[in-house]
Every structure is written in C-alpha cells, then in structure tokens.
Image 1 (cartoon, one colour):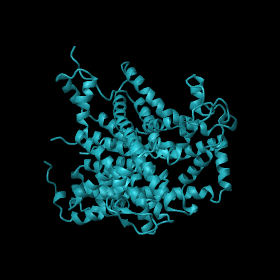
Image 2 (tube, each protein chain N blue to C red):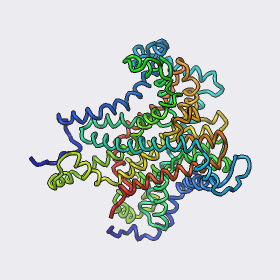
Image 3 (tube, rainbow over the protein chains, first blue to last red):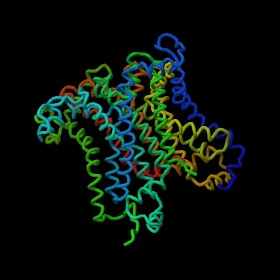
Image 4 (tube, each protein chain N blue to C red):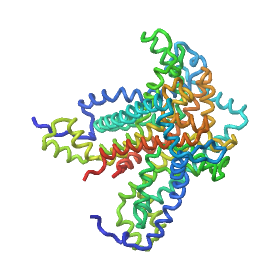
Length: 302
Length: 290
C-alpha cells in the first residue's frame, strides 16, 4: 500500500492536472487518435479522395479476405514470415545480445551497445542508398564483386529485382536495424537486476548461466521485456517500408510486398482510401495480437 | 562444486569473457560495417568510386562528394540553405514543444490526482502499438481537413505528440519522491513552480532521452515533406537529401554524393546519442510496462 500523502489529498490538484496534460492531449487526439478512428470509419466506406465517402459495410474486409489474391498469396505470407523473423527473432536476438553485453565490462560494453544500436537510428530512408550500393546488380556491386571473388557465384546477381532474394534482403535489413529502443530497455533491465537474486538462485539449485537467464533474469525484468516486445513489434512493421524504397512499389513479383507496402499501394498510388484503411485496420489488429501474446508472456501474473 | 552464481555487470575484464565477446562479435560487425562503409564511401574520390573491383576502404579520402553536393544545390531552384533553415526551424520547434508538453503531461499523469488520469495513461500506452505508417493516410486527411496543407504547421504539429516519449518520461517521474514535492508545496510553491523547480531538474535523464527520440523522428521525417506540403520552399533537408539518394544513386558518380548526403543526415543522430547515452540507459531502467 502506498502511503497517503498530502499531495494525493490536495483538492486543487484537479484543475491544474488537466491544464498540464491539455496541450499534449489535444495534439495526441488530433494527430494520433483521430487518424486511427478515421481509419476504422473509412474502412467501412468506398473513398477515392474526390467524392464524399460512401458507406459499403464490411465489403472492404470481405474483399480483403476473399477477393484480394495479392494480399492472400503474397502480402500475408510475406508479412507473417517477416514478423516472425524480424519481430520475434529480432527480439530474442536483442535479449541474447543484451545479456551477453551485460556480462562484459565497460567501456567495451558501451562501445558494442552503441554499434548495435546505431543502425536503428537510420530507420527509413537515411540508409536506403547504402543498400542500393551494396546490392548493385552488376559486377561493380560490392556484394556481387565479393561473392565472385571468393568463388561463390560466377555471374552477378540482380539482387533487388530478383524475387528469390528480395524478401531475404528486406529481412536482413530489418534485423540489422532492429536493435533499437527495445534493445536498450532490455540491456538496462538486465543491468539493474538485483545481484542478490543470483546468489539466492544458486543456493536454490540453479546450475548454470542458461538456467540463471531463464529463472532469474527474465522473471525479474518482466516489465522491460514487455516494453521491449511492443517496441520490437511496432518497429519491425514500421521498417517494412524499406521494401518499396529499395525495389519500388509494388515490389517485383510482389516478392517482398508487406502490409505497409500494400497500404501505400492502395492509398497513395491507386487512391482507394477505403480499402487502404481496411488494410491499415488489419495491420493494427495484427500488431494488437502480437502485443496481446507479449502481455500474456510478460504481463503481471498475480 | 556447487554453482555460485556469477556476477552480471562485471567491473573488470576476465578471461572467461572472451568467449562471450567472440559470440557477439559477428553481430557487432554486421551492424557496424555498413555504417563504416557509408562513411568510407562518402569520402571516396571519383577514381575509387569507379574502381573495379570495388574497394571497401578509402585510400585517398577527399571532400569532393560534399563539394559536388553543394554544387548540385546551387543549380536547383531552392538553395540548400533554405532546406537547412526549414529543417532547423521544424526540428527545433518540435523538439522544444514536444519536451515541454510531454514533461508537463508526465508530471500531471504521475503526480496530480484527478478523474480520467488512469484512462489517459492507458490510452497513451495503447498508442505505443499504433504503427505510424498504418495511419499515414487518415493522418494526411486530418492535416488536409484542418487546412494546414502547405504550411510549416503541418510539418510541426503532427510530430509533437510522441507516445513513447511521454511514456518514458512518465515512468521516470514516477520514481521521483513525493516528499520533495510535498516540501515545496509546504513552502508555498504552486503547481507551476513545482513543475519547473522540482520535477524538471530531477528528470533530466528522461528529458534527454525524449529529446533523442523526438529528434530522430523529426530530423529524418519525410512524410510531412512528401505529403503535407507541395511548395518546395517549405520542405526539409531530409526531403532534399532523399531526392539526391533516390535520383542519383543509380549512377556510380552519384553514389558518392548520395553517401555524403546520407552521412549528413545520420551524423547528428549519432553524435546526439553518444553525448546523451548515459541518460538514455538511466531512463530505460524505468521503462517497464506494468
């Protein structure tokens, strides 16, 4: 029980509290909440940005599930694959790396952490050019030249238009830039676990570092694990944008078409805003499912 | 021999740690090399850009690419200085306003009691999960309806609320002792004075962290320049740099310029993070969702 303080009793806090939160709340409602609500509303309409939206009920959702072959054949499987490897895989990787970093001393730890974190600062467009240079499709490309050097390939591969390689490339870039805020939160969480817990666990029969990690470290930092999971999921979906920056939208053969690219395709290229909104809502729901699973795993369990 | 439990967060280097370092080294290299590559590339002279087979390391570093970048902008209709000015104005305003608004909101949500407080916190927490690209289109419509298209406002206001920033600052304010606020209150301080004189000095690490996060969002933001403004004179440096990396990176000569442009966009982020990284780690320790 929290001690009752004078602060909590102060009646006049009330009005001041609203005033302090007001500027943020107003902007939040206009630019974050309203768009989400609007997306849900628009997803039940047919809207081409010129005429006033007309209500179509669940038509967009029915089309999405039954009529959109590109979505079912390419976008959804690609997104699931991408989310599992970059979202879930990246999360596990972030934890393992953070745990390893916690076991080495400074300044090496800080230097490594900085290097691992730096790619996530480049999110979006800042580094598109980098990948374009590395994956150039003729023998002057860095990867091609190097692979031909060591004899792995004889002919240069046109990476960014080759349907076989595009999704793996997008996944690798996703993993590359996935050590972000979530990773830092996990690292801080591990570094702040109570040392006496480890001693106690050893007495209770924990035999090695792996057991320590599972039975001591993870349970003692559930809140950070949850925060990191949410960050990881959201960032991985957000970074899917890189596919259309590298290979255009739609990506060749829809090879690396992810939900975010599908939204862009319908929204800003075909101007079918109602349908794009339905896909957006689907994406928000997918993220919601992932974070519900995370909450199940790491939320308070009492 | 019974297992003693080992120490996390070691203070000294021990031989046993070599194993761990070897395990993480590949990932560190994978993350670091592309960054080093872009730095090398930005300083490559023409003959090294054209070198075949391509070389990773720059042997004769030069500023030619940066000079070319300046030259390109001179022939463009909008001078580079205009883009720089726009970016500084927009980034500066957004970071400043965002910090004021989120710290004030954090103080209110954490320390002041009133109806609806818990619900507001819940909504903000839920908003952590809103993938920004998912609501790109409706946000564009909102900006449009408000009549802000083609103004600085459209590039400033939508970027101010950042749920992660508020969340982290609020978690940090939770850690500050109530007794300090109480003491200030007893001395006759009002809410505003407590906010400025007690809370803000105590939460500097969280402010620094929020500053970094907001800065990263705004500095490289393209959405606003691409969709909210048509007037090139209002667009940002990020937009201009992106046109360079997009249009010219297909030619070998353009690659050097594009790399230079990428570096200019990336470096401020890196420098800011290096300076403030202690604060970030301090804030992240309180980042948990309960």
